[in-house]
Length: 107
Length: 121
Image (cartoon, one colour):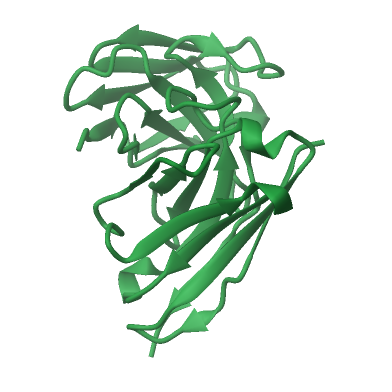
């Protein structure tokens, strides 16, 4: 199975900060990567698909990049609503896998 | 409006069985592959299984292969997960989720609110 490793596990930041989360795949997944945001007690929400495509309705401060084995999610200016846990997910193979999550906390 | 409503989660003893259901509405159910994803308390998301629109293809995570069976009834707009030989590590919130279309190269754009399965003696 393809393993997905996110870093950091926890990130402390302030409103207005630029935030970057990294996701590494154990083998190439081309651009078959998605990013999700999850808030406590809620279902995950799709933010980015195919590594860099913004899901409809998602604010433009979110962006994704990368291909192959290394990917990043960037929030250009962190807003109060963005404090949450973020997961990457590969959908390249028939055994999908998620990263372990990155919790973005208030500094 | 797309809605996915899971049900069937209860407390069950190790070794027991359970069937989860997901009622879908607001979209053409048989145009879409469907998935189950779970999340143990305080842990990361874990993909469990997927089923093609016509139920001809199914795939499972290694952790549930041979114990869980995914199925669907397109006439009832419903997705199911039959869970046998349950283990304590299967304790989780189980989500039903859909991609934007058929096929396997899609992310998950709609999720239900989940149903809680607790495996405990």
